[in-house]
Image (cartoon, rainbow, N blue to C red; front, side, top):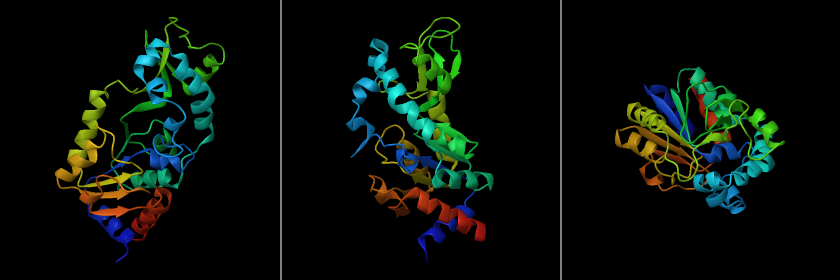
Length: 249
């Protein structure tokens, strides 16, 4: 039997389905992955551009990166077929929650309503002093004038709502993700290398609790041997086929 149809049948028969996504799903929209050949960290040292110590020491490193790379990239990219397929699964009642390592907001833009962002979002900027929030566009306008950008209300310094290297994940968000993993009976890991902790602990917890684990990733992962099904293919190719099977069934 076709693996796509088998996976779709499992999803249809499951009571609680969640998805865990990584950089690979957004790379199909044109956002480079961080690690590996051509990844962002081959061009920009993460120990400087994405490290909380360096951000506090000299935030210009991050804001230059934001102005020259991140903002133009996110203004250009759109959700791809994989993001749209997951949103369709959510609207149809098959998918409960998307848990993502990504900070690009493309799941929400595609229409997914229940999204847990483990590493925060680059689309929200806030003041470190008074917590006033700014949109990405507002932050860019400020960066065009001065670096680091300053809060309009209290003159405090701004920062993105992302988790830098050297910072812990928000315990409330991590707890919510763990609860989803422990409640689900089917987890779909998409576009993740499954090497970053503690994020990788989410599919592991689900599997240990008896959930069916399906991995869709172009390259092999350290958890492949634990998975019930592994598909080394593009998410934008596989997920729409799964959705089509669900519709036909």
